[in-house]
Length: 208
Ligand code: URA
Image 1 (cartoon, helix red, strand yellow):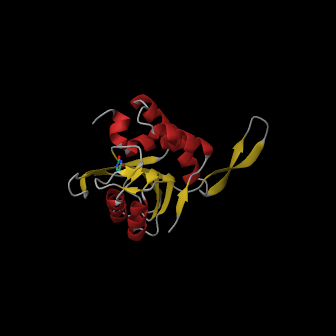
Image 2 (cartoon, helix red, strand yellow):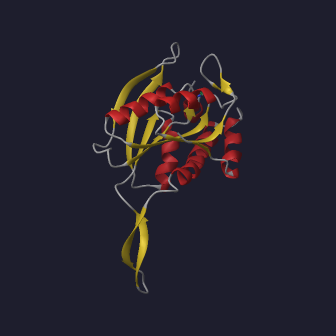
């Protein structure tokens, strides 16, 4: 099990603006996209490389290129799409899975309503993106589903995590490394991360 906090100053600065309740929907969305490129940089920093021969305008050379099949970003709808955009800015050839899961506000249990993923997950790195690791229920369900569909090499990226969510998630999926911009204090009785930033989906899309 591994949990990595991305403490890059740009990530921390942007996160602080996102937490501020006065930050507009447009700014929130832009910042999430910007932060996600920085998180993407970290979650992909150990990807394997291989060599290819190319011709520059001056001569031939062998140069590094990513090895293996295109990776998959798996977005947990709907807030995951905010992280997805920045990831695709950096890895435009990636494949994308969409997992529709919402939290029942009474039980806090995940309800799945949509799943679409590339057919061959077994030999691709799959990076699950969901901004808020709160109770962990939806994230666990998303990874359960990806594993059912063959994914074996999975990483999880979020913006904020609660200690309760990390414990729950890493107990359920000890093989999945977690990357987060911050670990907050706790969950409140409604399952919100405290101090957090509120409902990530609502803040991204201006809904309530
Ligand atoms: N989901 C959110 O969007 N915010 C929280 O604080 C917890 C779950």
